[in-house]
Image (cartoon, rainbow, N blue to C red; front, side, top):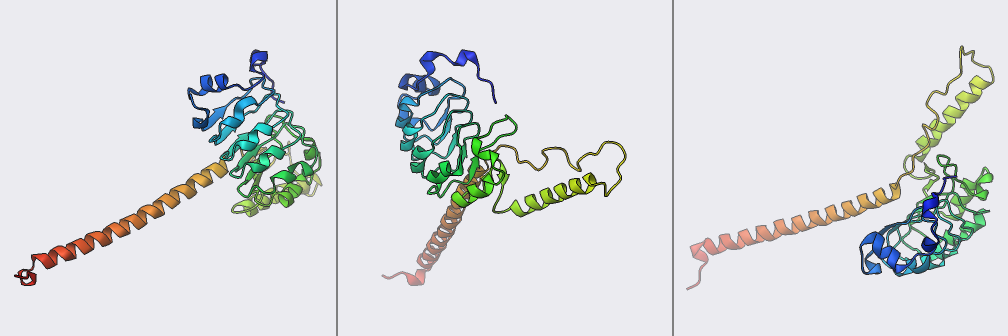
Length: 260
């Protein structure tokens, strides 16, 4: 598990205060804060974080947080990192309707029932419960079939632990992984005589997707395409208006059309 810095575990930083948020962001009005990184500060209580009503991206990783109640008012939240804390209940997140990406690796979620409160979040596409890179997990991950249970519980999810499990690209991902596992079993059973040390046909972790903000990128592309479509429609309307104006000018330039 990721090591916390002792210098960040200052008792005065145990609770989020307006002064802390203003000093870290330079914003005087808490509702103006859109992005906030409070990583590794030894935080225990979320304090006034619920007053940042327009907050879209929040990083609270590597703290001592156990209760999430103040997050229930953050209706505009898109990406939330709660990894490496002491969280056992996610109920307050059920009202974060715009949440797309959630990282809760390295907490105390004991079973999939802890995720039931998230099933109403229709935009939630990516959830991370385990992060082998930083040796973070949750007790529920001890069950090898937990990913299938997560998919059954939160039907909108497309990415679990950085691995695309449904949607575009998932079939190829699983096909390649199955081939890789089959080759390992085939060689391991002695069906193929291999000289020297046996090596996988790709480097370890090749098929594991690295942590990313894929859902955020997809949303950005969607917004871009929407804007592009609006531009095309405006361009068409402008062309129509110009054509109509040209027709009107042509008519007026015709002296036979003048009425005396």
